[in-house]
Length: 341
Image: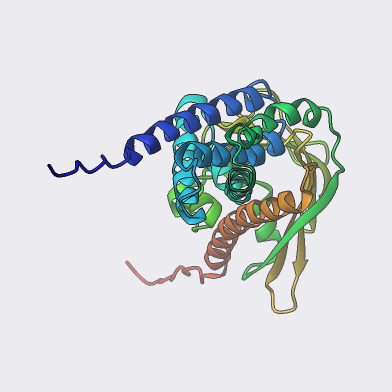
């Protein structure tokens, strides 16, 4: 009588069950870490790095308790779990795509460390329960993280453009930028790929220092710039003003630019007349970040502000150069003829 070969292990079912557990775990940690902080506070250590590490360790223990799979395979499984968690947070908790993209460089090292930790514990000590310890770290670190005061970093982004128009024409198209058609805006990575809100309108309530400039962006975002420097045809300076309704509830609260983690401080336009009749226009925005890794925050602040600057300056250039061409076009002269009727 021939021997009955053993049934192959149900690896597929094991992986599916592990994915389900990891996804539920990831959503639970997200809800505990992020939902109580609707004011834009950032808990990137426990709510992103350690969350990913917990997902990685869970997937390793549940999928590969005997240590038979490679690191690359386990990383692939854990990446799928994180992707599902990301999609569900967008659908269930209105998490922004921008924040998910910004978190990827934090999630990938976290999930890798979680997998490596679980592999070491399983391989050296054959202790499955010890490998689960990583999954508890977000809950242990979160109470400490929310009480931490991270050092501030204040920086600025400055972008310039040369416009074929005189300063007075550029000034007129800078102090107010009304009725922008989003379809005409140039492509940038943050607007075209990350769906960052685009500018729609900027208008003054009056001229001079002390005026208020009201701005509107896509997504229902509205805020103010309080003008504190007004040097006509030379410089316009302001501070930012946000209220609780500036960023609608449908927009990710972590994008608010008036929180302890990230804040827009002030900005200015500087116009410099050039010898050939053109104008150099410089837009500068000053900001503050306060995160566990301020260098990482600076990278994203510089990227987002650079893209925003380039979009706005391009609109000013187009409108100013069009106005300058109209002003320079020769006007038709009337021909006068006289004689007997």
